[in-house]
Length: 343
Image (cartoon, rainbow, N blue to C red):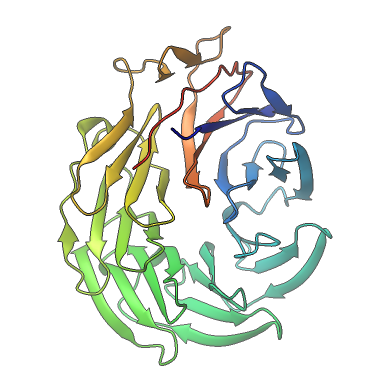
């Protein structure tokens, strides 16, 4: 049996529960947390608040705040990406500019200008040397981190770019867009040409995740999670339940280190699926519509206003432990999380 670690991010603080009756708060935000994401090390996470205009980066293991970045009030940050070593963080937003920061030194490393509209998607290459940015201007731009120069512009039958992700060997980039074009495109980084496009036209994919072995792609729109063979573009069968397909935005999606398990969740529940068979192996479920997120008999809730947490992100650690981020605008009580057996 492996331990399951639950991280709860709330508007006025961040609490971490690790199968212990004691919760550890990370204070700092003075407004509601808008969204949060994990770094590749599954130990560092960033929480973004449009209310207090800050991004706070925290270290779970050492229980400390690593960095606080101030955001411009009139420039909404749409996307954040961590470098593979979790030391750099890139930001993109309404000012069409991409900014890269050294998290631990708190220094701005470089700025990339070239997009003519909002930057909506960011991704570092596996070696950390290249940054891809997708924009509302219908282009994907590749930037060299060391020289701070643009390397290439990817253009095709694209619309508003919503997500970009490199495959594990860094030779290909996968993008999604919202509009009249085909939903998903796989690009050859060297030639800048399309390798394959698939999915329906006029789709609304918001997020892409590639498995560590580079064989499977998971696409997420507001109410639909799908698995694809990244080489052929064919959709794979997966038994996703109604609670995952019918509700608010699906934000938490991640593959296990061995690529055999997919974790996906939204709002008040998260489940695990076997990627090969498409079968659900474990589910932390709701007890009914708008009910509490339940891990066995342990509850997480706002005891005053009865507001419920919403799952924002998930990540597997290298040893297979699953971590979950959930956001809540006000105070939250965190109880011990029961263990879960991962195959």
